[in-house]
Amino acid sequence: MPFATTTTNRLHLRPLAPTDRSLWARLHTAREQYPFAPWARAQDDTAADALFERALAHWAQHGFGYGVVEDRRSGDPLGVAGVIEGRDGENLNLYCRFDVPHQGRGLGTEIARALVADAVEHGPDLPLTATARPEHDASIRTAQRAGLTLVGAAEHDAVLPGVPRSVVVRARAADPVDVPGPVVLLAPRVEVHRTRFEPGLRRRVLDLWCSVTEAGGAVGFVRGASRGEVRAALAAHEESMAEGRSTAVLLRDATDALVALGWWAETASPLVAHRRTAYRVMTDPGRRGENLGRLLMAAMHRVARADGVEVVELGVRGGTGTDGFYARLGYSEAGRLPGGIRVAPGDDRDDIWMARRLS
Image (tube, rainbow, N blue to C red):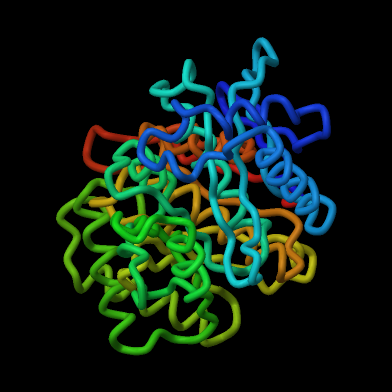
């Protein structure tokens, strides 16, 4: 499975191996690793080894799981991280634990962002959660920067929107009764729409599109475009959806808010039936820095791959830096028309065409 291994700017995540037993024991028995939940650490190497064997068994059963995070340059092990399937099969769980000398360097956020995106694109279609002690601000921020939303505390009898009950029960089960329950965070859920939107969702889509435009997003308009102009463009996309020529992919957060949106469009020619073009890729400008662009593209790739698409492409407005974002997702520049987009008199931008294979 693709997220069995993950590479970022500074890190490489590889599968857990039997030779990692001592690293695992050190990370899960050391008191300094559990400043907010000392009761949760493994009390000795035997207890840690039982957890290790369970982690290896997860790999054998599912083909993914917790792995070792290594420094890309030196190959030194820095910690463990990964995504596993919950014991009840109702969720995926995100986990990161770095050795103390490597904490505070932003490594957890870096690997978590990659892991959540890979899970959205390639993992089982289950809610993705993370838990943290309510006072562990760094852990909570890591999950939020990876795209998860804080839902609430896993207290007894708590009902958390979008979170399976089994997650709440297990999160609280090992805690002393006199401490607050851990908080639960939830990744956005993916929605696929192949027909016209219902009126309430249409308003939300229009609101998002207008706010992205006013924030300077390259989604077909420039700042100052009227709501009516954007509405007309949205109607054209919905007409294409009704005709079966395009598909909308949405992300909604734990509060049901629409936080990201994009379309895949196809052409009528049988010569390019294996290709799709992405249009109007947009995320909530008030949620920048929360990995939503990467999660949206992961969701779009998942949908396209399920539809049998082999090659995906998109247009990028020069001067925005967006081409670098797509390059990091595996897209390569396939063509460029210098000055092909006129944002304003005297402000011409390159029209860049980028593409990648989904295999």
